[in-house]
Image (tube, rainbow, N blue to C red):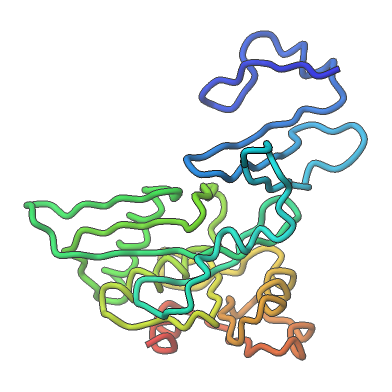
Length: 245
């Protein structure tokens, strides 16, 4: 028997919580403006809640996606500025996705900041770090987008370096190679902080043919050697900027 309940804006079941205690599993389907659907278990008496299902909405209903990374990578073979690829973690699955950025000269008095699928406060913080530590002033309209329409949780901070790389790539008109994967969290003092599950993320990127992978220095492990990719640990934002430029 399936029980369907109303969910409010905070992704909580409206009304009394008796229903949550009665059922064996509580499943939630995240939707976005695209065709991607993410199925997660908030409660599961017969298994873990870390497993996440990725589906595509089609004319025949929701179909399982065996390789989610194919959805969130544009598949373009033409290298252009304003693009960087990173690896996020959805439950126990590692997913490669492409972050796109476009900077244009502003026509108004104040520059615009537009984000699709990203947290605006995170973008403001990263631009502040660039102004402070990289002496980069951004007087442009800036647009961010996640290929495939996926929404990134605010807690997923491993995309910081990729966001910075995509922004500077568009701003300074240089290309980040499509065989490069960038992951890492950026602190307010310009240091690159470690991320969780660094080894599985690196293995996922190597399996998809990425030849150079930038990771936080403290995430480096000997098990990453022999994967067929060049692993480049970075300690600060200055090291990353020198390497990608």
